[in-house]
Length: 206
Image 1 (tube, helix red, strand yellow):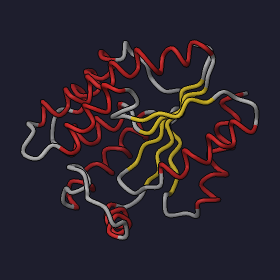
Image 2 (cartoon, rainbow, N blue to C red):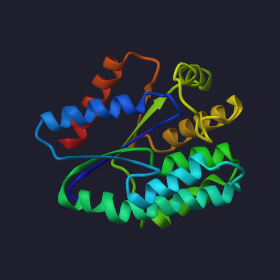
Image 3 (tube, rainbow, N blue to C red):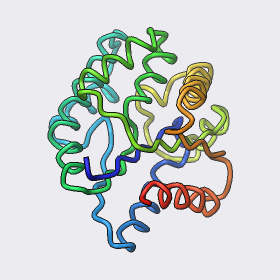
């Protein structure tokens, strides 16, 4: 495909939203057409599924949770992301399949390989060109969340050991695919992180 697919990953309160906005602004200023999206969500159906998986009261079985994320992903990629990439746009996305491996695989203690294969099947094998991983210790992420006056979603409200498993899983994924992942210390300044991201995206754009 003619476009560039950039995904952002990391634990909760790792700074993804800030860096996505800065990257999109920089790309637009450079004359690129940019599509900013997210998972779960990104489409009308996706927002309905997002409300179920993140805000439904009560228990959701881990495998059911993984399947809801995969359903969202299948629809999102088919209707929104792949058409944008085929047009030659740059897609900047908050979370993708690596989130499912980390959160449902390690966090929910499901088989990580099975979770990944489910997402690859759902998306017909679409893998990002670049994945930016903002690495923040779980305790720091939880402390950052505590400063925000809002209700936590189902995953944000999990205990610290859950978030540590998620972080460890992300780092394992990054080590397995070093050419795709850009791992950045998420405790650095916003400006320093943005500079590193711009340098890597510029290289990807050629």
